[in-house]
Image (cartoon, rainbow, N blue to C red):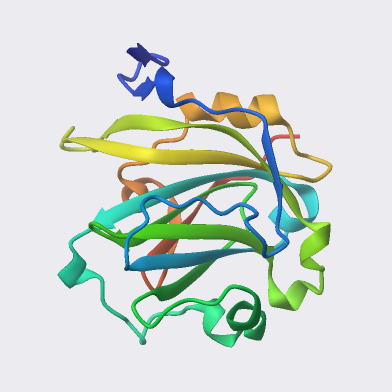
Length: 213
C-alpha cells in the first residue's frame, strides 16, 4: 500500500516503516544494516562532525545499488576510513569487500553510498577521529524507513529510492518527531541538484540545512 505525503507526489511504502529502534555506535552490530548475505559488501562508516555531533539532528541513509562491474576503488577520492585503525581490528572485512566512509556535519544530512548489485552493505555512525569523542558516547535512533519517489527539479524525471532509513542523532537538539516529519520534506533522488554535497569514495554526503531553533 502506498501513501502520499504532502503535495509533491512523493510516496512512501507504509509496510516498510520502522520506528523506535535504538542503537549505539559501539562497533558491535550497532547501527549496522545488512541488505543481503552475499559475498561482496560495502562496509560504510559515517563519521559525525560538528555541529551534528555535538547538537544532534537527523541523518537520512540511502543505499544505492550499482552494477558490480562499476563498484571499483577510487583512490583519488577522500575516504576517512583509510586512516581509522579501529575498523580493521573491530570490524574486519574480507578481500572481496570495500571499506567506504564519509563525513556528515549538517544537522539535517543525507548520506548516499554505493553497494554492488547482488551484494550487501553494512553501515555505522562514529564520531569523527578529530573530535576526541569516544564511540560509546555517540548514539542514534532509527525513527523510520521505507521506499520513496523523487522528481528531478528541472526535467521532472521520476526516480525510485528503495530502502532509505532515517536516524535521529542523539543530542540536545535531537527530536524524533521532527526527524520523522522530515520524510515529507527532504528529497532523496537528486541530491547534488538540490543540496550542498561533498563527494567521497563511493559515497556522497549532503548537508540539507541546520535545525531551526
